Length: 188
Ligand code: HEC
Image (cartoon, rainbow, N blue to C red; front, side):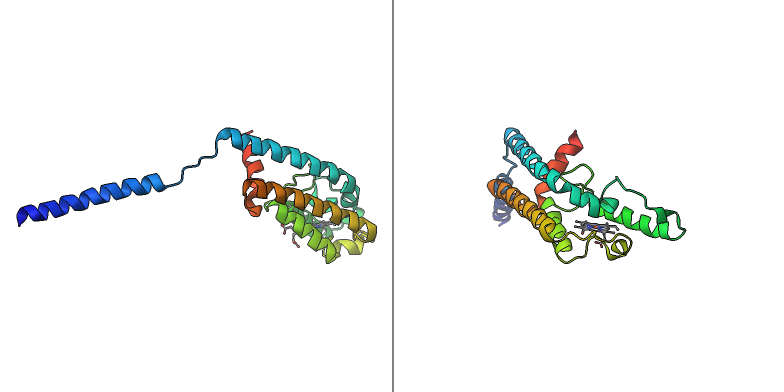
């Protein structure tokens, strides 16, 4: 009776050991070799460079309509010196910049993925939400409309397609695409 109990316990322990070993070996290791990752990053960099080239063409309209809040190249207007007004504007600049910074071209500095931010740019412009109304009151004609809007949207759609094709090729989720790049920047 006593020995049967021992055998049962021993078998039980052996089962646990075998089981944990099986499940350890079943844990998928990160098998992507470094060379493959470097190849992906190099490809990503060259795609970004192509997108940035297109960005240079649409940049002037963004400089006119968006850079006051979404770049570090802010031109302080005359009314910036009016007490109260300046802090109101400054808070918009700080907030705008925090969300999206065009200063160094593409890839933009943003907390979101590049695909998300491109999508939002289109949406904000399409709905006339950006530039902010409070800004447009002081700066007439800053809405991006007509032919300008067409070329902006063309660039956005082309860039989205390029980024999505890259993600599809490597099975990278769309919302994490930029992290490859950020990771690289961190280690530089
Ligand atoms: C007067 C300052 C100002 C101007 C000019 C301006 N923005 Fe903004 N923008 C902001 C602020 C503030 C926010 C964050 C709050 C919000 O979403 O309303 C923002 C948010 C955004 C976002 C959303 C970012 C996110 O993370 O959700 C996009 C996209 C954007 N702006 C695009 C543009 C574009 C494109 C232009 C030019 C056509 C433009 N903005 C002009 C102030 C500005």
